Amino acid sequence: MSSTTQEIPPEVLALLPLPDVDTLAPDQARGAVCLWCPERLTAETAVDLGERAGDDGRWWPRACGPCVGRRAHRALHSHVALCEPCVDNVGQCQAGLTLTRLVRKYRR
Image (cartoon, rainbow, N blue to C red; front, side, top):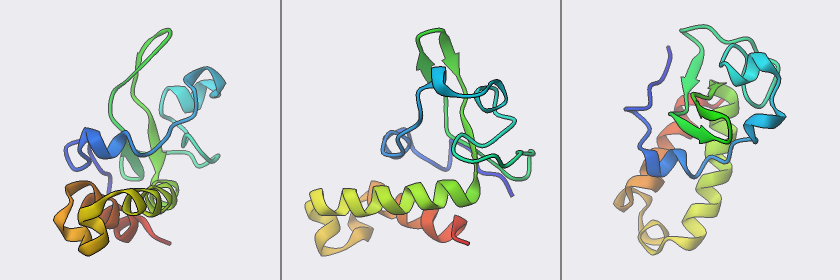
């Protein structure tokens, strides 16, 4: 099952750091291969990470679910350390809640 950017708000996508598009192989830059690993992507396995602006124009990064889950997990740990509502209850913060859902959805 693929994910869409409508499921991942832009403020949460911003918490998932992406490699510089200039460092990617052509298949990664066009979304045929995961940004972070050599996994080939299909419509069913790709997670859309939203539209991004690069030096050469716009691009639409995609990744595999397990890589998104791992990066969401790291982002969640960084986020909750700095977010007062998350310290009390991660469900009070949309970013924390969305990152938690990504971790659960894509964990392997």
